[in-house]
Image (cartoon, rainbow, N blue to C red; front, top):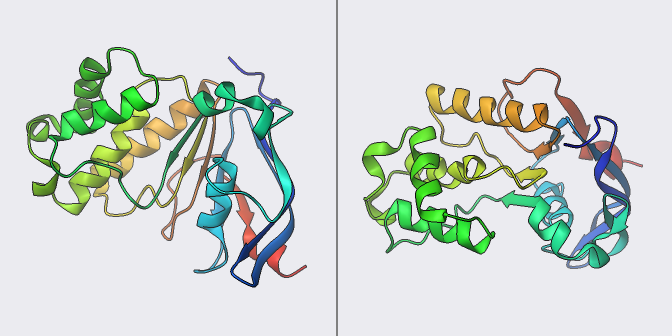
Length: 215
């Protein structure tokens, strides 16, 4: 369990370019244990680009990302195992069943007993009846819930980075997701998310990317 004041993931003087365009520079962000942060900004402001940099999937134009005080490039497996990124793409394999696809993602993330855990995770998000359905037959909302079931697979990842997680969810699924995020913070994790709709979470910290862009 992390101490409440511990900084799990930190960005220092980050800059990001898209082609020749500078999206932002001098960005400072700290994700502390027990926090949920809403990353805000207009379309094209660099929210997804920032999330991918923080998740170690893209390199910044300048600055660095630290995992528990250690540069990401040196943190190695600890950082990889401690981070969970779910982007716009649901990353589910079309020709597998939903349970098979979630289990496959779990195994890639080092989850033990991935098959059994995938079944429980899908039950958690209300997809019991669709576990054996091919991913290609699912609705957009079902696919999104299937991707988000990874949040219930295991508790190893201390930091969740979620790009538009509430997209395509109904009221019940929104409540389930909010409960998962709240539980992650309660056990000493940290969550960074984007959303174009109101986020139904208490104690939310807002980080406006536009304030960085206007400096």
